[in-house]
Length: 173
Image (cartoon, rainbow, N blue to C red; front, side, top):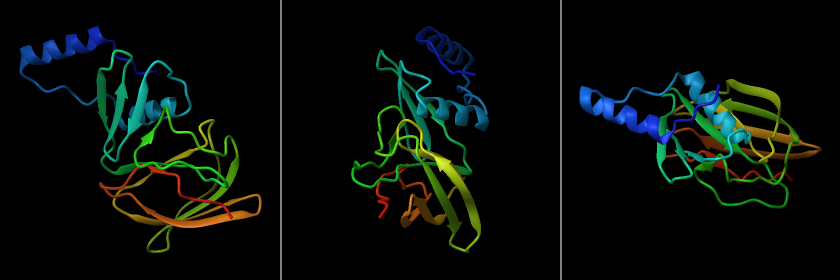
């Protein structure tokens, strides 16, 4: 299900809200927002740009208007681009602009929380943008190990409000 709001639909919503003195309701459920994020991340939506902070998905239309969606209160989005030779500095992930080095490659990923509980142990494949995306519990610090063809990286990241959603510092050696 694709989410596209035309300018006329947006204006009609604003006018209706202004006339009724109510606030604009949240767009869709948590699963709808996750699906929308995924569609931008894999390039299914091409006529808009999208970036994601710790709290919001920000979509910019071709006319430069913005639509802002709130992210789930209990889950944090993070996108990781492991690399060997090339990376770029990044804090908040551009779902439609960031490009990682290792495209459509498989990685063995292990994540545990600070208490030693396994959060993820799986083989993940980066998308065409060289990133794999995760939704993790908020307000935690994690240890991550990524293995790929005999190369490995161990690192730490967290999912607090001030943390970025784009991790491009995990170099496989």
